[in-house]
Image (tube, rainbow, N blue to C red):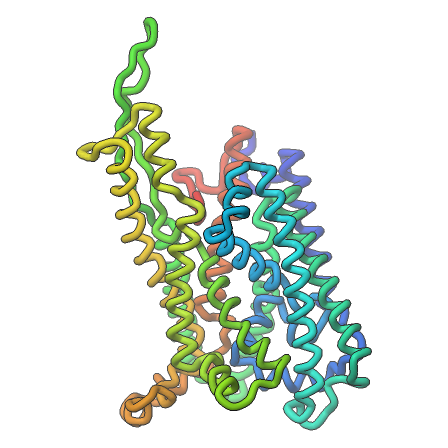
Length: 463
């Protein structure tokens, strides 16, 4: 048996086939990055993308791997699927029919997945239509160049058909990677879209340094901050609270069972990066509706206040992250089920009565550590905005202008650096990488091969 884990990856036939299959589908995904939507002026799009780079548009363009700024066939990316998953999970709590399906095991899960696919197509149609209308209305933004060669319903229908088909194909790719690849299909597609932009971002940063647009000290500060954020992400993602569980001794025939002690590891950040993606997806809806219906008056004022970097946006973003952190944790971890299973097998937490008291004890601890994880996610997610545009305090009613005059410019205007080095990016990249490495390592250890970590097991977000 070879002690080199990289060689062991390809020594197991099934694992080798899964890795090659995943790489092949990721390659197909990247091919779509170079197929533009018919009828769109690519030169004008480059100007528009450059002007909107440090906005919410730039953040979603990062998630799509640059497809959105070039309006390729994969411009919508995986975001419609994520949004539909959010809606279905929220409806599971309030709609008894979906709640029953969620408890029917594999059959119910397949039914919910089918509904998610249908809703994904509906959302893709709405978002594709909004993109088509946005391109037709914003010719002047792109330096006077026409973004669309032949505007009208012909172009709109073609754009809707192209982008919706691209989204459906991406959804299929993600499901295939999950089932026949190494898993985490949807996350790996987002991961690939982000990582592919790193070389260009690094080259751009050094070009700015050579041109005198950014100083060497600022780049060093950026590198130090990036390393610190990566270290903090790894530290928190591997952090967990252990709850000691003891099992009473049982004698069955001549054999004795139980009498052992174990623990329940509760993750500090159970939801991973899902709350961040969920919150950003929800906040994208007002801008989408405003693009389609050309809101005016108070409606436009609300949309302006929900723009990327505005105080109301920041507040709702943080609240959304905290909410979805608790919501997602409640979906995937049920203290009542854990307490009931412990009671069935004679397990108990020292000092806590079995049954309802145990469930309440676990739920209390889970609520506390989830708050820590949610605040950590919010801090990491808000970091890119601080680096890009700073915290705009002027729009805050009554005290905004006075705060803007007192606070330093670097706080209100930002550092003007690329968001590729922001916290959300690193959170997704590091989190997905840890999950993938954990899954591959589990496959190796299951087949009696050495994993990547010889002295200790690496823990993913769900490990």
